[in-house]
Length: 136
Length: 246
Image (cartoon, rainbow over all chains, first blue to last red):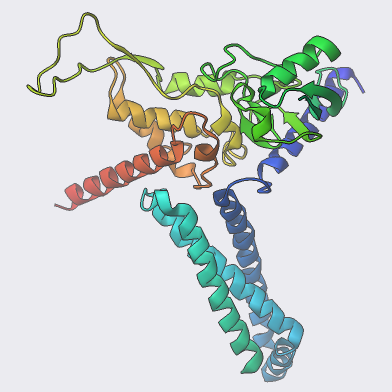
C-alpha cells in the first residue's frame, strides 16, 4: 500500500470518527440532546411504519392468521414495544412542535424551558398510556 | 499555588500514521488561560506540536479548538473555570474542517463561505444621531464599527448539519447574511444573498440544535439570525403566493 493511499484511509477514518463525535450529545446543550433524540425517534418511527405495513400483510392470510397475530400482540413483550412506540411518537411529535416554532423565531429565548416542559408533558402522557395499555 | 494537570492532545500528521492522543503533564497557575498551557507544552515538551494563535485575548478568533469536547477559544478560557487541580483537559481540532496537523485545521472552507456572502468584519457606521435634535451629530471622520463575529469557526464546528452537508453555508455565513440584510453594504447584491439563504444549502437546512449559539464566544447568536432569515423568507414566499392569486 503506498503512503498516499494509506494516508487517505487514516484521514477518512479520522473524519468518520469526528463526524460520529459531532452527533454525540454528551456534555452539550439541551438543544443538541433534542436534536439527537429527534433523529433517533424519527428513524424508529420510519422502521415501525415499515413493520406495520408488513404486519398488515398478515390480513391476506385470512381470519386465522390475523387472530394469531393479535394473540401475539397481546403478550407483555409486544405491550412494552407499544409503550416504546408511544414514547417515540410523543418525543418526536412534541419536539417537532418546538422545532417548528423556534425554527421560525417564535419563543427562541424559551427553547430550553420549552423542551423541559414538553418532556414533562411527554412523560405524564407516557405513564398514562402505559397504564391504559397494561390494564385495559 | 500551582496545579498539576494532564493534557490529552490530538496528534495528526499527513504521513499515513493514524491519529493519536499524546499525554502531557503540565504545571499551571489556576488563573492562567488554556492557551498559556498549550504554549508551555510546545515550548518545554514538544516543539512539533502544531496549533494556531495570535492575539491571546479573544479578538482574532484564530486559536479555536475543542476543549473537553466543547468548541472554545483557549485564549479566553481560564483554566480554573473548566477544571481543578489534578484534572485532565482533552484538546482536539475543530470539527467539519480538514485537519492540517494536530490542532490546526484548514479554515479555507469556512472563510470561502464568509467571502461568498461578502461579510465585512469592519464597516463604516451610520452617523450617530444627536439625542436632542434627532439630526446627525457632527463627527470628525467616518466612524468604523466592528462586527461581533470573529470568524473563529466555532459555530461551524459545533453545528451537526455542517458535518452532514458539505455544501451547507453554516451558522456564521447565515448570520452574516442576516446582518447584511439588516444593514446593507454598498455594492452588495442583497437579493442575491436572499436567494443564497433561501437555497438548498441555506437557512432551511438548519435543524435548530442551537449549538452555534451555545459556543459563540461573542454572543452573535446565529440561531436567532437563522430563524429571522426563515421568517423573512417564509413571509416573502407567502407574499409572492398571494400576489399570484390576486
